[in-house]
Length: 181
Length: 185
Image 1: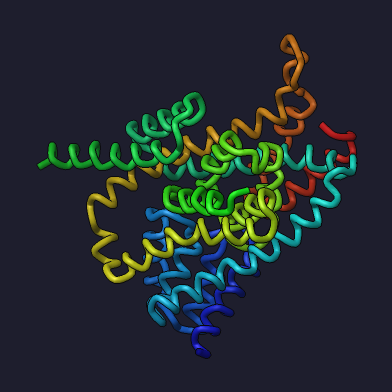
Image 2: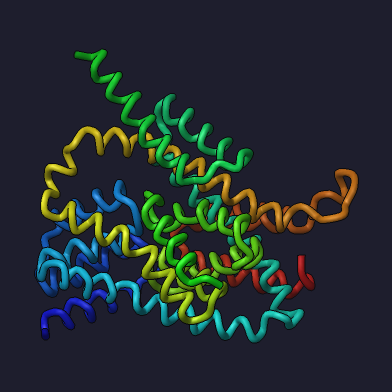
């Protein structure tokens, strides 16, 4: 039982003390999981990240599930995953209920009108970085633009766009490989 | 609000959003159109708070949206919903990690997904930008756009590009202070 709690607490510490989501968590994970606990190696951790990127869900959570399952199977994975998300849920709900009580004050509304603009700026720069990392080949441009147009100007659900993109990726790349052979 | 429906919608988001927390944004945007759980304005505030608090962005956004829609139970259920699909998927993959990584269907599907997700997120941001930069009831170019907000936006984008290493919370605090100083955008 002690090991399950250890999994929970270790991941709660990682989730509760790192800002900035999945990638920002990597150094903290290396320190806690590789150096201190020696539950995994740097190489394995990077593998988990690589898989987390191309599987559904949130990367940090996926990594917690991996490490937990390696340590203690299905139940270990559950404790690690719950540990990762628990601080978020508590902190967010405290802030949300606090903000709800003050949302009607003009000062707060003015502040949030400025915050919304700042959020647009942060996301725009995140998108720019993603673009630089992910959109390189001509085909990537087509995928990106088609997904944008479908999502912005048609009522098609993102679910279908994601499925279409995966199918398109398989189709175009396998075809390319076949041509090479 | 129907908690089962909330669970189902977030389960769907967890199952189909690939590529990190921001990838859940297009789906949350869709929920704004589909239900009256929260508005576009709420969503912008939710992102601001989620970027400024510890923890994975996608989890923060799910707990906040669930809480806004249905209180504490809503926050918990949305979080469990978004986590459950990846929990199950990872448990399956964990037993054949190496094979999965090298599988060419996985690799090629991901090649298509990676660039499409950039387009999806861009489209989702348009909805939030519209709220800040387009004025309702305006006519003509001068009144249609909120030029004050656009000017502030450009300055903030430049700041963000200049200081990429800085934590987003700094930009959000600057936004809040400027918003209060000019009496709202």
